[in-house]
Length: 195
Image 1 (cartoon, rainbow, N blue to C red):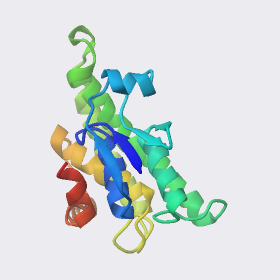
Image 2: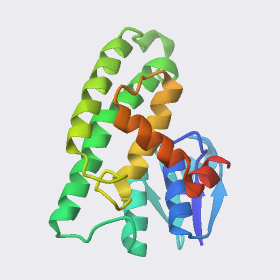
Image 3: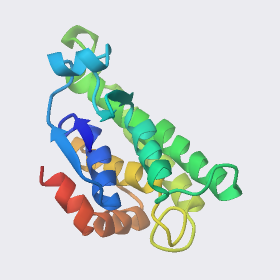
Image 4: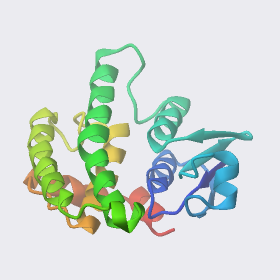
């Protein structure tokens, strides 16, 4: 059984959601970042951590891609053009959505108060809106980023859209609003968020 360490209000939500989508059993330990149990497995103190047969795997994206590969679901095969496109979308989302939201969070409550720059959020919101247009232009036909099949980048996008909503970053593209509504209606997403 998998062990997921991290609160649902962190990137651990991505791992919980992926496991629910895959129908895999797991134990959830809602430990906060930098807590004793977390730092014993990840010296940086960051969550999530997935423990597999006593071995910790770090970083939400590495974890969910591992799970997709291990269970042969929600991913395309390595070495295919579809996998290259999937990986490209994953990296785009990490660079243009996740990084922007993370920078805003750092300047809201993570950095020491004397290092926070409140004005940076305006440029980050502009960047987030611009990146939404680019993403919509890259989306395939169908409900998901890659078309009719849900893959790893859909988990990242769904999480980032919820994060954006909570952080006051407007979703300006109708197609992304529709995607977010569809994702939130998924039973696996609802089970993960209920934790």
